[in-house]
Amino acid sequence: MMNNINGKEIYMKNLNVLIIEDHPLMIDCYVKALAIVKEKMGGGKSRD
Amino acid sequence: MSKKKWGGVNLEISQAFDTFEAYSQLKIAKENPPLDIVFLDIRLPNIDPSNKRSGADIGIKLRKEFPETKIIIGTFYDDSYRINNLIDKIDPDALLIKGDIKGLENIASAVLRTLNNKHYYSTSVIEIMRTRVKNPHLVDAIDRQILHELSNGARMKELLEQIPLSKSGIEKRIRQLWVAFNIESHCYRELVICAKEKGFI
Image (cartoon, rainbow over all chains, first blue to last red; front, side, top):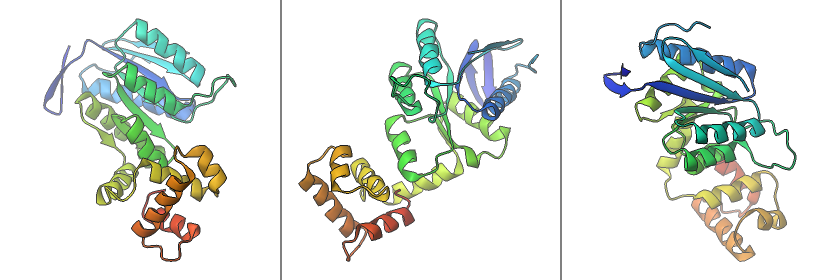
C-alpha cells in the first residue's frame, strides 16, 4: 500500500504497533489516535 | 496482553501493561518483525521484584535492537533532568509530556511525523530543548546528574555512590558549576535554585 502523508509517499503494507502503557485512558487515546492515522493514510474507519 | 486486528488497513496493535509483558512482547517482535511503532510509558509497573529494569531501559533496548522502530514516549515527567536523559539515552522519534496533550490530534500528528522520519516533541519538551540549545556547553550529562542529586538533598557520600567520579572530580565539577551559574556564595542550595530557574533540573 502506498500512502501519501503531507505530500510524502510512504509504502506500508502492515503497521505493527506495540503499546507499552498501563494507564487505560492513555491506551484508549493511543488506539483512537491510531484510528485517525489510519483514516489519514486512507485506510477507512476501524471496525472496533 | 491483547491483540487487535483491524479490517481494511493491516493495522495490528499489541499491548503490554508492565515491564514483564513488555519484554515478552519484544521477544515476540524480534521473531516476527517488523515492529513499526512503539508507544512507551517510562513509568511502568514492575511485577517481578528481581527485575529492576524500568520503562527507560525498555526504550534503550528498543533503540539498540529495533533501530527502524519509531519510538513514541508518553510521560507524566516534565522535569528537565529526566527529559534530557531520555533524549540523550533513547533519542525517541516522538516525546510527549502527557500534560501537553490537548487532544487525539496531537498524538496522531506525532505518529504521522515519525512515519515521515521526522521528530515530534510536545511544547514543554521544546522549551526544555531551547534551554539546552541556548547553553550548549554550560552543563553536560554528569553535571545534570550532580545537580539532580543535590536537588534531592544528596551529600558527598551519596554523590560518590551515584556519580562515576572521584571525590575531587565531583568537587571540581561543583566548583565549575558555581562559576558557570555565577554563584559567588558557593552555596549548594543557591546552585540548585539557579539550576532549576534555568531549566537544568
